[in-house]
Length: 176
Image 1 (cartoon, rainbow, N blue to C red):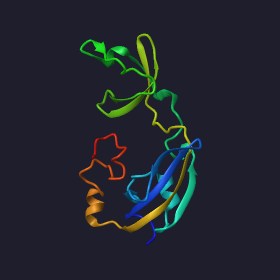
Image 2 (image 1 turned 90 degrees about the vertical axis):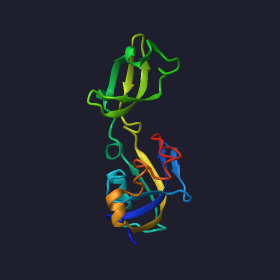
Image 3 (image 1 turned 60 degrees about the vertical axis):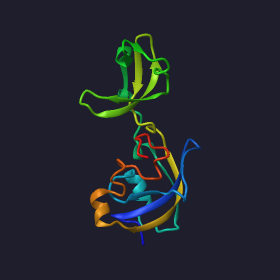
């Protein structure tokens, strides 16, 4: 069976950025998803369309086709006061490179990376961690099958907040 809309695909991959492997999914715990439902980057899905179990792939997505270019307006300077709990900032919280869960004025949850710590402010980067990066993928299709009506209605893992078992080892949403 070939990959197409509403097929369940299991695949392996290695993701490289700047010639460094930053993520890997092996055959014993492949990533599974329903093709055509927005689970993966659209350009990634285009690259694997019509492939079958056993087929390999090797392609690069330019930043514009992945998570976009880095947006300078996604860098926001915030008062250190917002990081205080009981009147003080906990030691070690404001460390450059640390990712913190945040909330915007509309109540939307997002993650920000501390880019710079100044005397009275903190510069947060709200770009996706891979914004501006070209993504090189290599891997293989493990299996392809039709999605069931239940899977199409509820997803593959409806009780796991969008995580798949293969993602739980690195999932930050606590889906295990």
